[in-house]
Length: 174
Image (cartoon, rainbow, N blue to C red):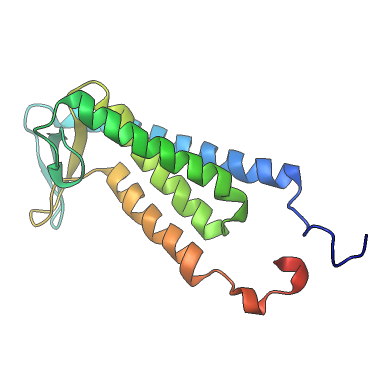
């Protein structure tokens, strides 16, 4: 068999496994950090306590919907099932594409999955997601929301902006 007809080199199994594990562990750590801060926010801010930090207020609210309270009137199980399916699909895609992602995209995927998992777990008790960051001009949000938004931006930057065009790659890099 000549060199031209052999299959392109594939990343070693160890590197593939390492990329997947790093993505999952990072997402789990981020979800745990988010959930711990939510527990702290509930403990400190119960009873209507508000802390004014200038541009940002810290106050406790519960969001039974999804982004911007969309779907807040839907039954809780519908919101949980829909978000669970979306997170499962995103996780499957991220885990299986992690080895081909840039480092920035993997960091973005970890942030996105960690934030999504934190909000999903928080939603399971039926009371809604704990939100505590309030600007006055934007809906109240939490650290998981920051993770999700930042994760999407980093994922896109890593996938689109920083990805090396195929024309600049050598044959062995393709």
